[in-house]
Image 1: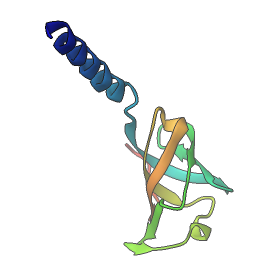
Image 2: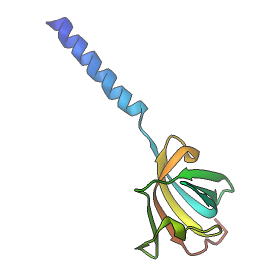
Image 3: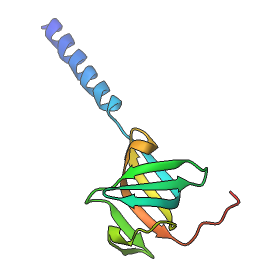
Amino acid sequence: MTRRAALVSALMLLAAGAGVVRAHEEFRIIGTLMKHADSRIQVKSRTGKTVSIRLDKQTAISRDKKKVDAAALRAGQSLVVDSYGDTEDDSLAIEIRIVPPIRGGD
């Protein structure tokens, strides 16, 4: 019986550890929309890095706290993008906010 309990405990620890390995990071990208094509956007962040972010049907897009369609996304707009994934460049947008132009001088 003790071997069985030890085996069950070991399997539970292994399963709990596997969940941590598959966990995704959350990202906030603030920058300028460079390109919107199909289900991807490219955003140039304030640090100068261009990031490609996926969109899906659940991605919430808003301007002035009002929901807008993905067609409202235009190159040159300032965005705040909350996403999750393994890396910024391999992430899925959860929420996109179109904001007034972002001034320099971090």
